[in-house]
Length: 339
Image 1: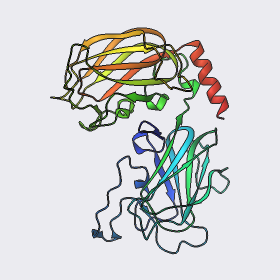
Image 2: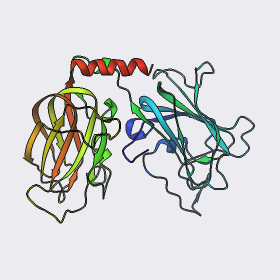
Image 3: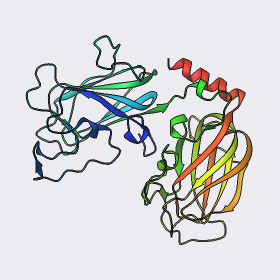
Image 4: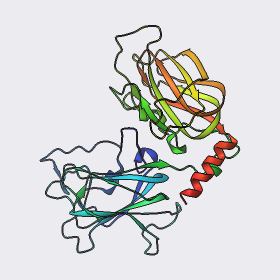
């Protein structure tokens, strides 16, 4: 895993905890909270000591407890983090992860649901990130965290690859950079104040911390800049670029340019040696604390490199386009492979 991996279960993508066997001490909804868990010892309410996570009552019985999560966006699972931080003498002894494909209105608690085990029963460590790799290549919409006992879990992170439905791309402009459509932040030059993965989030920024902000560069020259690389699920012809500096009032990036690539990711070196030689947006002055939309025309683009001069903050980057014929073939092949 790396800092740009997509948490398919996150509430920020629309993930939801649909049901749980019990939540006597800690609410099930906290499992998908995008914020890091916080625990203040000695703080009590009517349920007992306040915990930032899902915690069940004692003595669950031989079948243990469980919680069902609908992923915010369906995808192929790569790894699951069962985070037990702050749960020490009250953590579960172990867990199993199951997954399935359901419609939005299907009953996930129905005994007839065809769950598949994607992480076999394994021991959980207390007060730790418990990260388990998933080798299943299929696309899933729901996961079930099945505990071997009662206890508490702070967060459930389900990392994976978004698999867009090709039908949602057909004959229309799509936000190809958006995480819900398989857009992914692959690299950034600096993440000193906040993670560049916020740039592709589906929602509007909520504050200055909900964006990408770099440290102040001291080697300022005419071409000094930070940069971020965003890949697409498939090649597209770009028609519009949005650069949003909302909430960045005194520290917004002064200027940006956008370059595109028509190449694919290198299996050995990733995007490190890929050329970005397609002009998408010339170097342009930005207004602070504002959404700025530009009409562009760049064909057959697989990824963009946004160059921020010289440093500063950007809240969102949105690239809109239509898939190429090859792009649609790529989407269909990936969809069929994961079904």
